[in-house]
Image 1 (cartoon, one colour):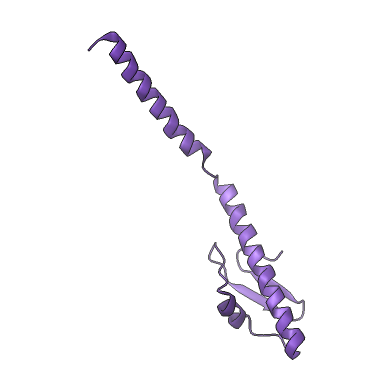
Image 2 (cartoon, rainbow, N blue to C red):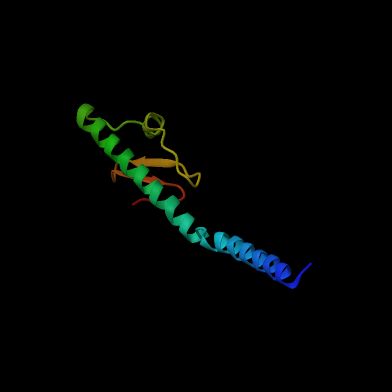
Length: 99
């Protein structure tokens, strides 16, 4: 194998290795993923709160949180469960708390 061909193959190997490292390095960190999941959960809780308030405005009673979760297909991305406290009018998640 000629020297020029060997250098070209070595250069290609280095470029491919650096490209693979850059893909790994550019991925989201665990902290970023956790923050994205928390943001998604808070958005879901906001939708749930709106639905609960609308039912309460129409009927005068708060709906069961399980029925709201089922109707909205609400799901915490971290596996938490949702609850609603009618005394404080707060929806919360067992993992992320409340917004």
